[in-house]
Amino acid sequence: MTFRIGTPHTKGAGYFVNDRNLSTRQEADVQTCPHCQGVIKMQEWRASSIQNFCLKCMKPACNSQACEVCVPFVHKLELAVRSQRRVSRMNQFLKRAGFVAPVPSRTSKFTGF
Image 1 (cartoon, rainbow, N blue to C red):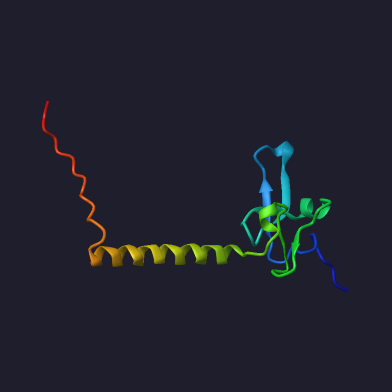
Image 2 (spheres, rainbow, N blue to C red):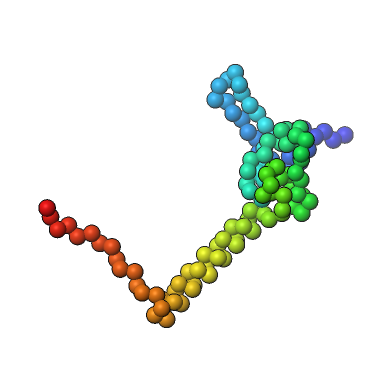
């Protein structure tokens, strides 16, 4: 016989404990949204009327509109790094070709009062 402790979809979940005040201690299984890295409390996600579950990632997602389309967070980071590399390469090319004037160094000179 197999027993599952916790809520469904908690494989790889973390555990949240808020014990700032001993009278209002909170505990929950948590996961991060695969699309925006938002924290999802699994008990609240399961109890909500709208359970956003990504069928491509096969993971629970938060209920924001931005997370309805499956674009994993890691892919967003890769796209940002690629775009920065392209900009850097283009700036280097323009500088070597002589199209961009060198930026003057900003040194402050104290002339006195």
